[in-house]
Length: 379
Image (cartoon, rainbow, N blue to C red):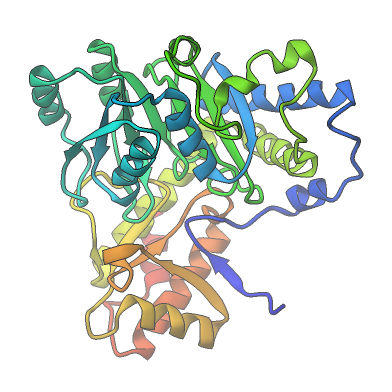
């Protein structure tokens, strides 16, 4: 298989020590009590990244598993669920809610900006009869970032449980789970954490556990049932065979983050994201968003004369590099620069800006100056 340079908003590049960790000889995770201790310790490291004392679980399945498991575990037939929608993944929660019999009520706003908290509050003043609400921290297809520090406490004020998809932000954006009153937060190993794909990260509050444990009906299914994890440590028993190599790898990736220090990690992401956006604007490119820029993904509008799909095809064929467009209606409109995790390092971002600059010029777009030089000026 031909190895290509990959610069996507997940899966991100994986550091060599993380790859090596995944290749280590392992024990039997079903019967070795020492692995239960290792797993719990890894969950506690994840808790430090999330700033939470809530239970943290690592599930065998990439990030979408966590999203569905949260909805499966909370939703009963007829439950009204508020789906806060300002992006493709934000609206996507509607599917999970309805699959499990809930009634999804959408609070929809433009994909070009963060959720207006004042408008949300005005909405809730009129209608707040919801079992729980879903919101996306960073909606990956556009890179829009929502202010959880205001949204989640507002929802809890109305006694609405909060479910947050932070897959594209966890580890690259500030996340204070306990302070911001987030009941369930969901992440994935392959984004800012920069481990291999295949694991979901879930933290669950006492309020969320109580709601799950006091349902009138049984949770549909087993794999998406978050209550099967309760008491695993006391019982020294997992509900299914754990992907031990993936967890060892994740543990090493978390060590990389904690050794650098979360404040330094967040500062690095912000510095690179800001310089990238400023360079693109001065270069003459158009950013998709009007506000709510995340530090993990930047969405660039591709000129109609070129097209995002044609641009990425050219980059792949000429420069052996994979860079992502977006999804659905934005597939041929947006080019996404995923400066998250290991991708949020100078060697990676400078390389992709150099390739992007050359590729746009190859296809007839003449920017103002050099993207790399402009980026360096804004660092």
